[in-house]
Length: 373
Image 1: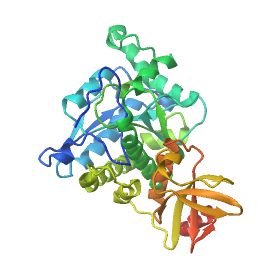
Image 2 (image 1 turned 60 degrees about the vertical axis):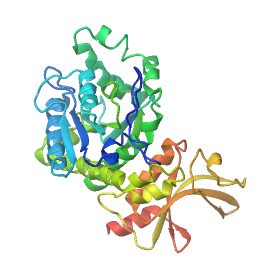
Image 3 (image 1 turned 30 degrees about the vertical axis):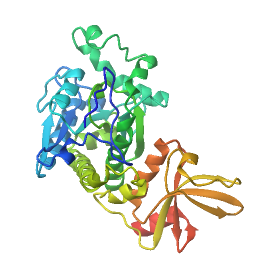
């Protein structure tokens, strides 16, 4: 069920009806193919914050992720590189397409001229902020290291925002899927490794150019930050990061296998699919219900999908003279974080998580703190 996308780019992973590259799910004899891409390599070292090499760290993490995934039945892992060699951006996509891959995951390390730190995961799309554009521009500039890059990339200019516009055409069918995987990666890294959350974002990356399957790019942290750089350069840091990335991929694959029978049902509800997501490490709060608050208004709005950007099963409650609108209902904090990211990408950037106990709203930080203690 791969879609031919002319000469444009492809967006990346889903949460609603899973219109993914489902060849593996539809044909159980075909393995689920994951392409792992270690950023940079060879004469392109990537960033060298604090003297570390992004190309070496990203490769070490990718090899560890692959080793875990290779243990899974009916999963085939392909690497764009397994050694310190230079691979053109176009060739990375070609490897995935030739393999008829079901998933493309690119691993990188970040850099900044400040003491910035934290992990962030990107899906392909128009940059929504100057900061996102700068990250994409930095990764895209590797094309200058390739011979005849003007001909190969059709006049694409990494420094020009207008060059990114064509990257999002005809890619909507992958966006939700990409957000799901990116959210699972981000949740694992933040919750289990206690890294700073720089969230799931959209930006225009050429490394995702023409990959005809869901794809994400992971910035594992900043080598330019003294503490985080040392962590990512350590065997412990690389093993832990690889563990959380591979667990997120496993959860994503599991969610697809659970939801395959529902793909052809046009009436599948988003929350039914959401409940099928097997988050690697459940984070259940007994007696607590988490919801995502979308809006609060004095106006009473019919909670039907066309009033809420296509979101289904919206709950409306009146509180202190205002009508409040909620999405999702779960005791699993990991799961509600995935839902929050999803609705933010659907057009509710200010959405946030609220907690209820016995039907009454309670302080979220206190709820989280109570379990931590």
